[in-house]
Amino acid sequence: MGSDKAKLWGGGFSEGMHPALAVISESLEQDMPLADADLRGSAAYARALERCGVLKADEAERLATGLLALREE
Image (cartoon, rainbow, N blue to C red; front, side, top):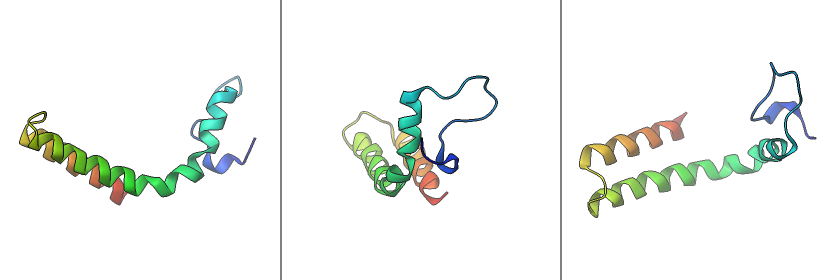
C-alpha cells in the first residue's frame, strides 16, 4: 500500500498498520497542500472567536500564534 516515505505511523510494532490507518497515512501527500490554508484559516477563526466573546484575547492570541508557528515549520 504506497511508499513508506509518507507514513503517518510506523516502526516498533509487531503487527502491521490497520488498513484504515494505512489509508489515512497514504492521504498525507494530498493533504499537505491544504495545510497552509487550514492553519491560516484556523488562526483567523481563533481571532473571530475572540471578537464574539468565546475566547479571551490572550487565548486567541496564543492559539493564532501557535497555529501560524506550525505553518512556518
